[in-house]
Image 1 (spheres, rainbow over the protein chains, first blue to last red):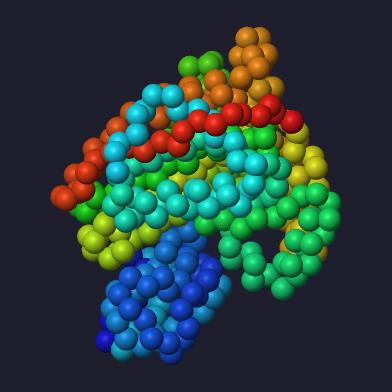
Image 2: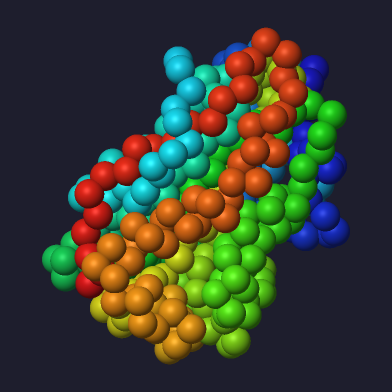
Length: 76
Length: 274
């Protein structure tokens, strides 16, 4: 099992980010490097790429507010 | 791929906004794939509005887009974050793409500061005082607008790509950073179109065009600069020089196995401001 985690050192302070788009399907197969989702913080669009191969389980939906270090999905 | 000469960088004018946005996205792809470590492009395009791709999920998006299209204001989607932003012949965009090597962490705020500082320094050299800050009622408002007094001159946005697809280095980061400078012409037509887009989509935000300022309206630039027929090209050349130090530092990033090179888009014939 591999968690898809928002990097903890991506931005300063406690600014919240938003998941703007999921580009991979919940339950779908993913490969390392696949573009899974995009989050937006401070007008910066950050690509979330798959860290592993497997089946994706989305834990935080589109428009969910997230913070650094959040786990937004799981790959099994 | 041979390094491209640093000389002769000039404004590149895209008649088609979709082509302009695709060219910008391709910069990020190239640095992420290791084809170059740092690129700069200074460009403009035809009048339109551009929105982050996530806007396409708004339920009334296509309706709003069709309304704007009928008004002669096409709406295009872009790769960077934010909100609706104006484009047109009087708006000069400067885009840089670079790879941040492993072991040299970069935060989004730092990247914005690095992006804005050369423009602010260039303005200072022209005796224009500017700073970063938010300003409500402006296009694509954010903490890293470039403001002159209490009016917005330029907006900024970024796109970040990390992970295994970046130069095959797990912790490398590829960054596309963009500053859009309002140089000439007024924004009333585009702000009206933006307001109709927001209203159609049920969004309460509105644009106050009087909160914006055009660079060439600054008294400090009156005279030979603004009256020059190639004023936009001249601005592009001066901005290119202003970003030279930043680009040198970015292109000197040490990533084993990569050739360090700086790519610039070749200048094309420019068109006059609206």
